[in-house]
Image 1 (tube, rainbow over the protein chains, first blue to last red):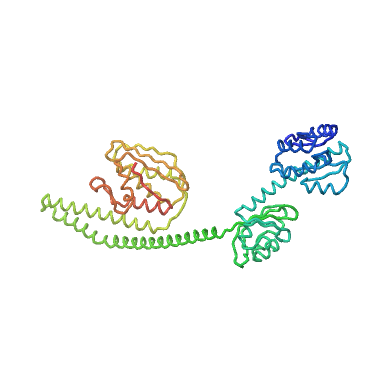
Image 2 (image 1 turned 135 degrees about the vertical axis):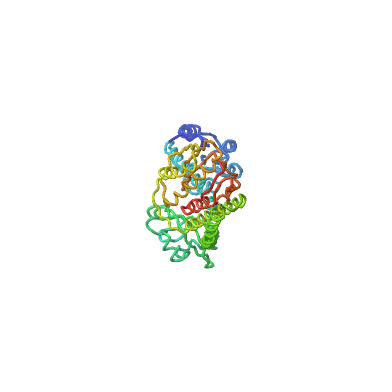
Length: 52
Length: 430
């Protein structure tokens, strides 16, 4: 897969291992942001992911 | 992409919060669950505003592939939606009618301009066939449902469409095959254009008629004038011959008994009669020139000028003449008429350079569009450009007979001959 660094993906997961693994895998292609719970996810989304 | 099950603030709640926040209302949300394998949580997630809900056993590679696939599909769909919107807007805004139809001629899509043109609603139009919208003969004459369009060739044609109120509207149509099933057509109302074209054509026809009428009138007037001048000259000749004959007899008979003044009077009478005779002869020749049939052949004007030059050189009475003659073309014309033209022009050049010790006469020719233009220039007395139009009229002279002899018919003859050869003629003062 070509790099799509113009596309950001926010991964919200409470399991740090899963989070790290997923961001490693998806980070090859996309700009990855992480959050460990819903509230933090919301804050990051608000800051980084206004509508496409 | 969010996990569904998280302590406290879970994925479902995240969806609700994001959807209630203006900036995040359309951000795509993917809920992933490895734990709650029941339909209820999927429904709950989607109701909360998630775009998708996927359930997978936690296998990072599998999950990555699935997510990547979803993201790419989402991006592709988004770009399709954008370009669809763009084209839809374009089609709707177009000032031309646009419609799609299938191989059987059934309309499948129309833009609002097209429905406006034909006074149907778009839905009504999509239930119709081209055969319903075009007079049969126009449909047959317009290759919309034939092989050439099917082969992918563009079809541009004119035809009439029938509006809902049965009136016909002329259109220019441009059609093209889109794929195996669909054809696309762009139509433009050409009522005004056709109207303007008809008007132009009518005006042109009227103009042409008037030109023909005027030409016929002019030709008639010219014929009458020719007949008039012919009969006048002819009838004048006889009495003049009497005047000249009896003047001669009188001079012979009474010369010894007349004083000097009386003899001078007789000489003036005799000269005037000779001049009048020359006038009449020239006028007769001019009149004949207008009616004589032209016998066209190819003429080498170099040779022609050489011949004419030999003739007119005698008229110089020993003055020095310098000829500057460029290479001249072969032309098509009546040889005796063209001879007369050059004889007149060269003779004039010799005559009107008389005050100069050395006469310089230049002859050259150029090709201007479809015409061959000859120039005969001399260093003679010349004439004022404002009299140039007069110069080619019968009896028009710019000099008195005392200054330069002549009848004033030579250039009128030139003019007439050049005109009969299709030329516009035209002297220039320089």
